Image 1 (tube, one colour):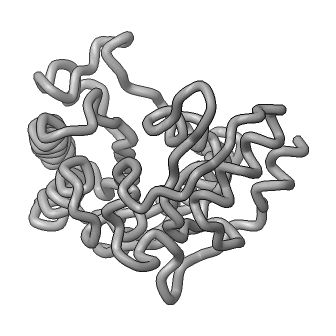
Image 2 (cartoon, rainbow, N blue to C red; image 1 turned 180 degrees about the vertical axis):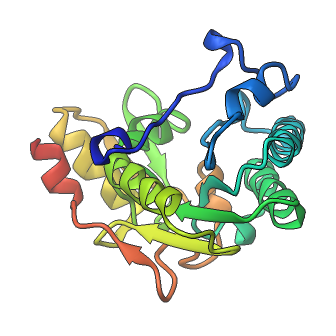
Length: 225
């Protein structure tokens, strides 16, 4: 995305000698960089995720300061500070460390990705049924998330949050039914207010807040591609 618009984007990962958890290779990887994008994710979605986000964020900020990187961008979740779930609390911790750090920053909070609905349904399903709460969500295509992150990276640091969301609000159970039908899956979606991590979400906190940037691609348009 960034390279298509004339920017040099260098991916850093353990495969090319950079490890956020140990700090190995970070200084060399960030040398000469104007912006550092942290798009990493915890390998677990439980209490252990807090250690991952704490260590990786602290290591990145320390290296960014040493290498005089002028802007750090991270990807977070719309409504993340209002969901009583260990993984969401860990993402809040990541945001807090970034806010308190020494480098100008932008936090891009996005809604759930269209691509994640299969995984979401797998958490609470069996051979006949899929249990989902009727939680309002406003999902978006991962390609639109990538565009939002790229725009943040080439812009000035906000030292704050930019919220991005899809164009339409869907109940999670409705989204599941559309996804199953599109894949020819005959399982039945049953509304269960307690099912999965989205069962603990209060109200409409996973939908676009006031001032959010709305993407254009609807779920049905995404399915048709």
